[in-house]
Image 1 (spheres, rainbow, N blue to C red):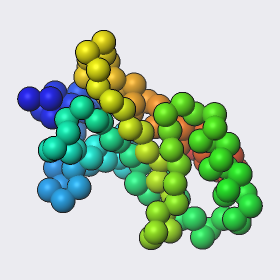
Image 2: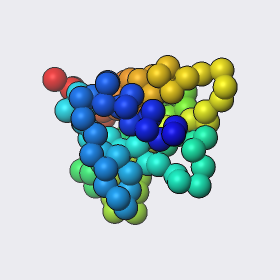
Image 3: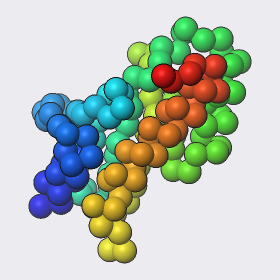
Length: 129
């Protein structure tokens, strides 16, 4: 089953993953919390996210909007959004095709989200230590 392959790749890259029945799989990479949101109806779409990178209200709207727009423009396949709860989330959706294996794409997505998170935080003047 494709879901098992995806979770196994997450565990190989990150060491652990925990199923949260209502959301999907939670894991930590480089000290940051991630989710793999599984869709039982469509196993061809992979959706990974960093669900709460920062609290939007902690930043001026101009700086935040500029950082979001620049990250969305410059980071392929990445989408930075402000959720209704006020958290800033970074998402990556990927359609599985026969030319890429789960073993290739899952580590790539995790690395891309890590890079995009650091890029976005840098635009806000936050240095990741």
